[in-house]
Image 1 (tube, rainbow, N blue to C red):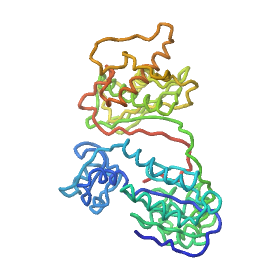
Image 2: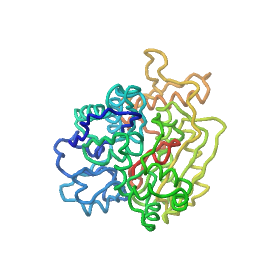
Image 3: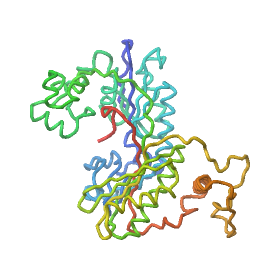
Image 4: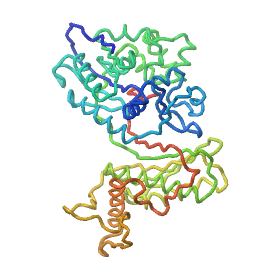
Length: 445
């Protein structure tokens, strides 16, 4: 492991640490399947469909395979011994939580950017008692004991720390001490800085600006002409100036799931089936977060890649797929006609609030699972809820009961009648949640 951190100069001022896991999803698969170590591993959609690569192991990257590449193209590049693994997000989340808990041992101020990267404030004597370089070494060593590796950058601000974490990947530590920011950034290509996408980079390069040092030399007027209203901010960050605080992730503002199809859907019943499945996932995720929302939205992408998004606001918030699905189906009907090819469908809920009252099916200690949701019991009996119980509470109890049975016995232990997926609707589901973050904080290209 590269470790250029043994510098005697004491750290003065603010310190931000950025941790980025190395080929995280693929590394977890190699951890759980030791026989895959040393072989190319691709996590993502099947090469036989329209999926994309989520993560490629470093062995696969040697063949030019990278994230977001169409799986079919990756298959043409990959050697015969390549392992293709479907994503296991629950497992990745489990290990991600463990890594983040390690980071919290050194600072309470942790800001996740995604499942595999986060910032913490490690300013000496404020939130972290020791030199930031020591903290970086210890965190890296503790992650090593989990059987996976990370790369870490430490600097006085988020921009430099994030760039530094990528500087010696994989399994590297790069520390940029106060006063060294500008000289560290100057020779690097402009594309390494968050907030400069392909269009901005192309515009800058067409004007002879190829490095962050050249970007840092721009005056305010030129920066605004080339990069618009964010120009001044980008120039400041290219100079190593970034005072943004490390903060907890903004509150979740939406929960959604979408699915891309191996073959375009054209049949109304297939569309209905997929909508119910997506609504089911959204409802469960809302309940896990103890949240409910008023606005239901759907996204429809057609065969020609045109996309329509429509929404409806309800009178009361909901976390129940039995409410979400019918509304979503009605919304789809406003933009789609049977026979028209559909490439992607998405269902989401926004306008979220925490539930005012938790309707916990097992609120009484030792209360048994009601037979109404104990679908794995072959008794054929069914116990109805109390007639005095409001419909909304009965529906909520049923939904949470189904969640509980699935958690214990598996996804297929209880299947609503509307969720019989046809073979055409296979594909990798993509869940998302969003908040208002500074575009420069991260996310991966």
